[in-house]
View: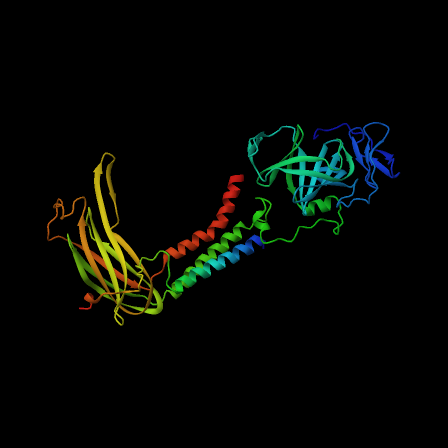
Length: 424
Length: 48
């Protein structure tokens, strides 16, 4: 249908039902004509006009009048037909455009958004999930819908009637949509590209009051609309997320409270646990603060040190307890040298109430793979101890909370990026 | 400003508020303190 046709002079005819004068723009190509005055369907494929279905209804309201001419995509078009269609949830308008030198095109209007349609002669290949057309992949947008033809007015190159049904499936790649319509065994494909509403309005000189408007956005509509159809708010969204993360971090630093620190080197004995080693005292200056205890072992290998912390409130004798483990192992196997473990351990104690605290540690070192209880490990002596530097700090930041915030903040824009990447 | 951006801004503000509230009360799902069913532990031997 997009191939050029030999231009024929438009002719006029009278509606056999209402007597209205109708212009035939694509004489010789038009099969059906819907009377713009009474809505009756006429067969104009033969010289004598035949009344297919008689209607006496008010003139249908369309944004663009039949016969209106306009220039889109560098070509002049005449609007020769218009139909209203609907599926289970939506209704929209389709305008048939005609240029005797270029052929037919479609202009589709849905909720104030416009698309320019070209019937495809080279058909896409694929299945119901995705198709490939001209080397590019298009993925399905929605489940298959049944479109029902409503009001029909103007001339059409095929037999059309109110109540016609077609199964529709659309595939998208960015802003371009390939629409597949099936009627019984006949399948047609149309490429739809977006056109700005203002461009359509100025091209066809549409009265502003008749121009379809976009519906007011509902809270969910922005998320449900397909990629490419929504305003591009990804950049502002990332900025909002980044600003929220940075501001939160700054306020977190502010409310973390005064910092107090105590540090000491303890010696973890091998094969036994040394209890109640005092590290130092710290003061928690706010009603609730985090206390971070960091343990750093010196150079050691194939050993681990268990550290049981007790942060004891001087006033009440109550303790907040926690556990730390420094460990490091290495060896050689068929894959070569390996090592694992960490000589540093961070322990975060939360909800520590205001007060002065003494930090005590129970520390015990062990060897791998054999502890002294089983047999002496190579290179060990009973006198060996592992020095571990313990640092307690009140007013530390809960980095885990902030990183969790960061992840949640970037999930929505991440989904949008992924969605666009998948469709591009 | 799109409806989606408005919703996202509200979502970000709520998340930031929750994070700040948890920081204010020094609560974290990642903290390592032991939770004793009958309250805090008394450790008398250490008060020497």
